[in-house]
Length: 50
Image 1 (tube, helix red, strand yellow):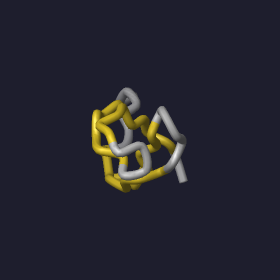
Image 2: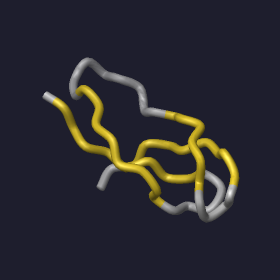
Image 3: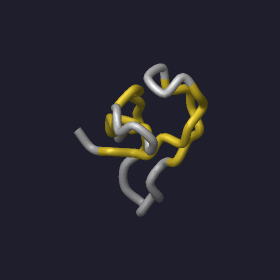
Image 4: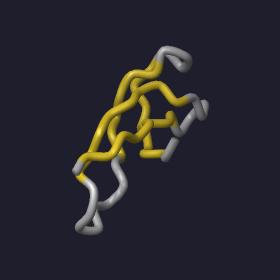
């Protein structure tokens, strides 16, 4: 089963992206470098629950 999560910018704290990931199995939290339109730069985005 898949679970929906939000990706939050580590620099400004805005939740810019929504994606899904596989549940169960003790999967580590996502850390993805994506573009933040508020910072106008590519920053690391961490997984946050709704």
